[in-house]
Image (cartoon, rainbow, N blue to C red; front, side, top):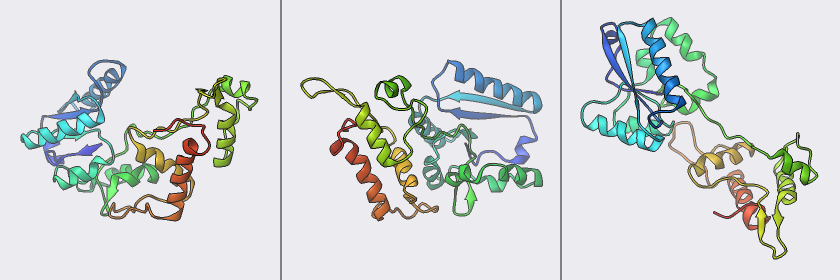
Amino acid sequence: MALTGGVTLAAAQAPVELTFYYPVAVGGPVTKIIDGLAADFQKENPGIKVKPIYAGTYQETIVKVLTALKSGEPPQMSVLLSTDMFTLIDEDAIIPFDEAATSAEDKAWMKSFFPAFMLNSQTGGKTWGIPFQRSTIVLYWNKEAFKEAGLDPNRPPASWAEQVEYARKLTKRDASGNVTQWGLKVPSSGFPYWLFQGFTTQNDVLLMNQAGTETYYDKPAVIEALQYWVDLSQKHKVMPTG
């Protein structure tokens, strides 16, 4: 969640309307939740009206935020990808929370978040975003497929080597050698950096520094992680290419 430069604590003391861009299509259960949160906030803060604006996907939302900024009417708050922080800083579109959250209570609230959640909300010694609906990569496995392959359905692979072993047992081919069931899939579309980061973190290496000024793609541990990902399809033939 990013806070734009268009709102101050002083302004919040007078009746104001705050626009809140949220990355989801209009309608559906998620919008009902956000509408409910906005209504609850307004009951506790009758001088402030929160106006949720449902802006589509994350990619569509950042475009709409920047368009609104250029038009001179930026939203006061937005839920965006953590990587959008650098774009917003370059556009001088947001202020750090450190400048608004100055009371002892505010500072205690800022410190109440898990440090790992705050890492990609911070740069240059300042906090530019607050963790909200953070996502993480998870491993799903089909217990029925595990049973059929002779694997323990309650025990996922615990290492890279074991993951390959499991995937080989789970991959099915017909009489002509064509794959009818892949043993594993780690998508390389959408947000490949994010998926790749899962491998590099497991290999005890970071892809970039905290300041966002250096990347470490040439580190041996990063290369090893990338090679493992490529080998799943090219060498072990347990994952589709692409």
